[in-house]
Length: 71
Image (cartoon, rainbow, N blue to C red; front, top):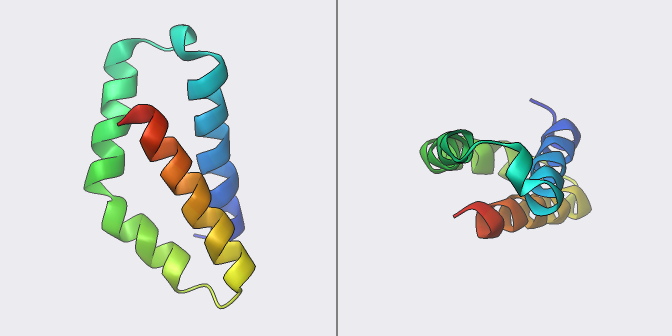
């Protein structure tokens, strides 16, 4: 998976969770939270292999933002 695509997806999920939390059922938010916890190592490995430091930082920030709002 491409780090830029991953970053965009993480930011999209953050924006939906931040702006429209009521549009998604709690059961689905819980499922997303569980999936983020389960796949944390995998997602971090995608981010960490990127050689571009700016992209890595942006991806880690997006991942952290999503985690903070959901978990």
